[in-house]
Picture: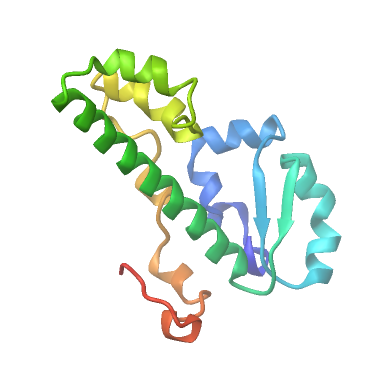
Length: 153
């Protein structure tokens, strides 16, 4: 919610699951912008979620959200690869799920995606736009050269 953006520009507004989480006050709210603006809006943020973070200046909320999305997607790909490895090793995918969900290999992504993978349900769970940002959002991010990092894009 950098620059006081309207809900229509917020990535969560495009994901119907996020709307339900906001109504139940279970979202993690990540905010970048002026500390005074954050303070003035904090009650609103806390109405949407218990975990509310002011992470710095303009663009930092978006950068933090992108880091979260990156880690989420990396975990999802790793889970899919692990299931393929297990299947090729002769393990029953359902048994992999039963063991891993109560072991250290479990995660939110594991619980969310493996049942769908086992059911061969590959329909996207959210619109692509909730996992990626538009070109207009990129203008608010510091360049990768300014961060001294590389970017996959």
